[in-house]
Length: 331
Image 1: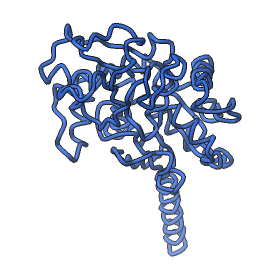
Image 2: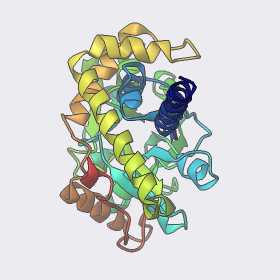
Image 3: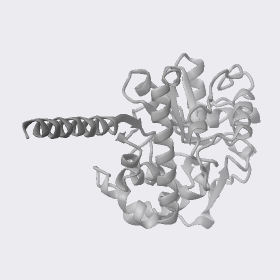
Image 4: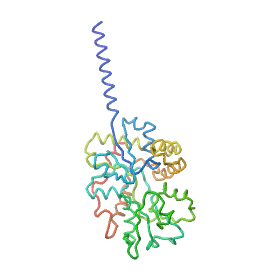
């Protein structure tokens, strides 16, 4: 009897240790640095967390909001994140400057970047930008704009025949207060802030970067090269991307619920339900049912746009090793 009890106890202990081992295995930590504050732009990740999609993949994901003074490439270079969300122009420029970023997945298939101008400025085409003041985002967001102006042959130093660049905060005040003739906006965010502020659509002129042939890829997922040298990390990243895309798919099918989840995670309380529901809907158009795989034709168009920058290109040579399918191949 004692022997049987000992055996049972041993088996129970072994079973308990086994469960502990599984539990430990299921707690793979991963930190994601967002490009901006908590909002519908990142709905897929918050949905994946809230609906348990990361848990199902054995992941404990920490989502770190960004902000106006947070540059994701600097965060990951300093060890503050495992994965970052960044626009490809910023990521490639950072890579050329020595931060070995690699695109492992590309949830956003389309660009949402625009310049929005008041119609009463007389601007009807990009040539009309000359002599005007344009609001531009920095912290890596300026690269598509600078490449576009360079291709048009329009100086950005305020000289004759050029434009004056206003370092735009992440709001629409310069257009509302007529400090700028045009400002940077996204299809899913600032454009609607202008509308909500009381300027009707018929009083605006919009230039979408895609329509101008200078659209570059946005909101890709990037890691450091060293992460891809570790098979266990590659497996973890594959699980992360798989769960994230499941989150994006859920957000596309349930935009109102996704917006509510975003609001629940917004510690500032500054977002409104109306704006977030609209943002999620517009963001879904950019994700466009993506499975996270990077379209290499779109990648090459981005590289070509950045290289075609005249005397001041965003990058000076075609990147090598800037993308990898190691993660998406495992999904």
